[in-house]
Image (cartoon, rainbow, N blue to C red; front, side, top):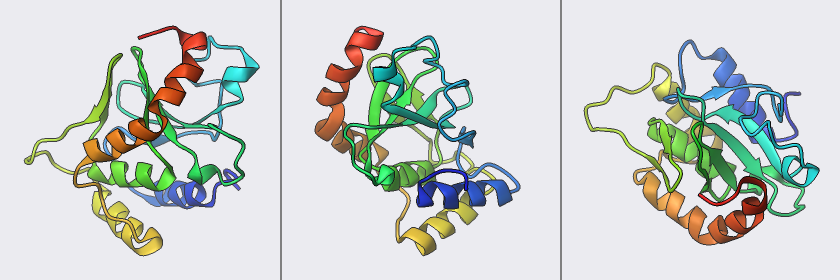
Length: 175
């Protein structure tokens, strides 16, 4: 078993069977692999124990992590954050299902110090296994691709952004 999260295990199986990218810049690596986590200079258990790295978020090395905002057992119900490869940490989804919808939008996340957003032009080509991913998402989880990824990010930030910023600031400082 790859992880204790059934939805992530299913995504990993699909990822491993795909012959090309499911979503732009998205690459799954070892579950909770703190050794490759870009915030590796952080050694505080209070920091590391609350973050579960799950995937590369874009081609430049930003990462998706699950934030253990509380001690709920269903890890798929926890919010998702992005850690930018050049700085910036932001909540981008309220749960794993929302992350899947963002991935199906098929655009690399732009993780800056002051914001995180997804952008794609209408004429951008989709990733090679995008259609397989969207079909899987619909059939396995009853979810559709995000039409407006900004709305998902905003809802996540509205619900968890202030708590996340309050929690993370002692470890990383202010943006």
